[in-house]
Length: 295
Image (cartoon, rainbow, N blue to C red; front, side, top):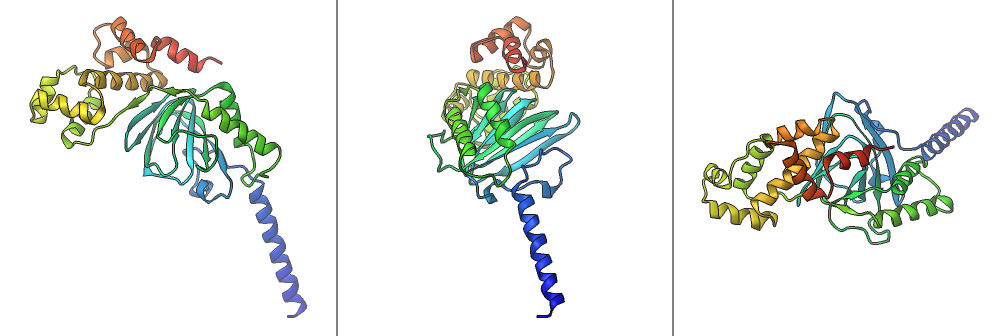
């Protein structure tokens, strides 16, 4: 090998070493609707037990991520706005100061409309303490929120000992303590029921009776009632009530007033809507959203 070739290879190796060092000290970028494909680094490909990143979308765009899965489990925190997550066992709405927990390997689709800000953490399922084995919406404490924000500032290939390990251990402990929220809508599999669900979500203000829906589906009222109970674990009335609450939370997070939401859902008065909302979530819609936007 001549001296020129030797110097060229040394320079090439030096530049490669600098590139590797730069990647290892780079945080996952804040993702938004203008992000490029190369901005996304698949968390399963990063040899770290926990990988975090932030995300933000603008007001004008809607976004859908079709059904997919990750080997790592995922917690998706919403700071501002709301998103819906559909899995094999149902649909979840995630309002501000809440998060969706998705176990590793679980198929899920994400839908976003309007502005959204938050943080994701992808977690090796082998880590302790024990975490939920099924998808669920969880309330986020101020401590858990700050831990997710702080973890997102770590380099992509962070050092796995010392302060970083202690930070992530506390994050896992706080996640294990998170309270599950009742923002889950079981989704039926039966084709006829799926058709009814599509019509109900498309026009939630139409307060049709069970008998009317049964005739549209071409079955008896008794058969429809039995199918709904078998596939969702709820009565028709309870299922529709849960659907209304989830739609209400999503619309309120998008900026609709309580009066507008009550009208969209077909309630004749605001007090009757507020009573239904309080019955399901334990507080009025005004208080529910104020607690998530305060501070």
